[in-house]
Image 1 (tube, rainbow, N blue to C red):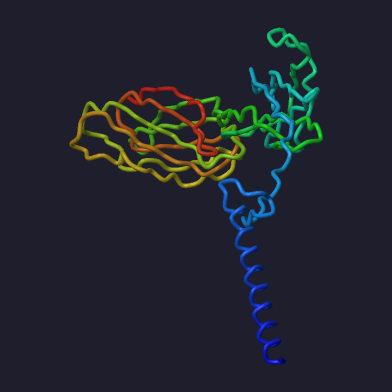
Image 2: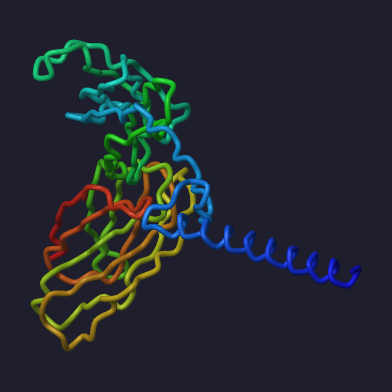
Length: 289
C-alpha cells in the first residue's frame, strides 16, 4: 500500500512541474512580438538627453577702423537675441584690453547696438594685430562660447626714415672722394643701408676701396663699413656700378667718407631696417667729375 502511495505522489509532482514549465513557456512569446512591453525589453536603457538650451550667439560686425597717433579707433555694431547691450572688447599689444557697451544708435540696424571707441595701440615699427570680440549675453540655459570674434585686423608701422642728407665731393691724395652725411632717426633699427650707384663711362679711376669711416671734429667714432657686393669692380668694366654699405644700429647724425670714387654722377639712397621692414628712402645725387 505504501509503495502504491509513493508512486502516485511521484507522478503527481512530475505532472505539477510539467504544468509549471508549460506555463512559463507560454508566457515568453508575449515578449517576442515586434514591439515588446517595457517589462520584456532587455536592451540597456539610453541616457536621458540634456535639455536644449535657448542661449544664442551674439552677432556683429567691425565696420571701420583706423590707427592714428598710438591708438586704434573701432566702429561697428553688435547684438544678442538674449538681451543687451553686448559688451565689445578690443585687445591690442598695449595691455590691458578695453571693453565698451554696444549701445549707440545704429541707423542701418535701427537699434541701439552701435559702438565706436578708441584703444591705445603700439606705434613701434613693425606689423601689429588687434582683435575685436563680442561678449555673449547669457540667458541661464545651456551656454554658448563666452565671446565671438568680430575681426582681427593688422596695421603696419614703417621705421622712421633718415633725414637731412648732404653730399660733398672732393679730392684726397689725388683721388676723388664723397662724404655722405645724414640723420639716423630710427631708435630700434637692425641696421641702416647706404646704396651708391653710378654709370661707369670710363674704365679708369674705379673705386678700389668701397668706403672708409670718418670722424667729424668733436663727433663720435664710426664703425668700419662692410660692403656687400658691387665694389670694387674690375677697372676694365664700363656700365652701371653699385656699392651697398650696411651700418651698425645707431641714432643721430652720421657721416661716411668714401675714397677712390669714379668720375661720374653718383646716386645715393639711405634707408633704415627695423622689425623686418624698410623705412622710406632718403635719396640724393652728386657729380664727382
